[in-house]
Amino acid sequence: NVYTLRTVSEANAIAAQSAGKHVVCIGGSFIGMEIASSLVGIAESVTVVCNTDEPLPALGPDIGCVIRNRFEAKGVRVLVKEEAACLEGGDVVLGVTLKSGLTLAADVVIAGIGVAPPTDWLKGTCIELDERGFIKVDHLFRTTADWVYAIGDAVSAPLPLWDIESLNIQHFQTAQAH
Image 1 (cartoon, helix red, strand yellow):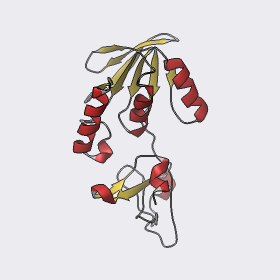
Image 2 (cartoon, rainbow, N blue to C red):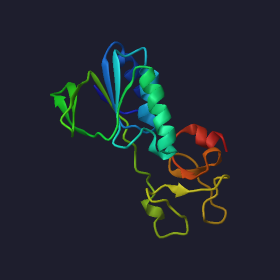
Image 3 (cartoon, rainbow, N blue to C red):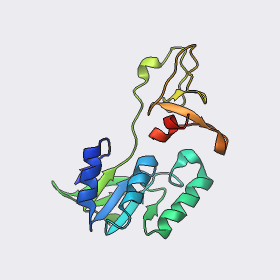
Image 4 (cartoon, rainbow, N blue to C red):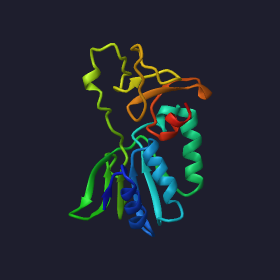
């Protein structure tokens, strides 16, 4: 009853297993928040555990606060500055204990803690990476190397609407909008 979300079949399994259940999403970035929003009205309860000051930290604290408030208004419990310490139960998880000592009942746990981009092979090349290892691109998805473009989950792209120079939210809309 512990899931990640990488495929359509995993999304279907999460939806089916979450109906009427207590769900804990570990991770307050895009995937964790998207899953939490999709389970409102399906699950008995939804709790998001964020190890940051606000969810969606890549969007900044002001936007994160607004999003947290919207989620809480819809019944999602958002715990900030918290981290999962261990899963309780045996083969079937019954709860999530946080580093603070709080234990959350959990019939379903979704690990949405993100991934590290597979860009180690680019270190030392003329393609610039950001501090987290994502490929820096401009608004046209050009890298710092001539004639080399990059798209997908491994890029960090600008978000001009919010005056954000470089952002990685690992969502298809980033590529679609450019």
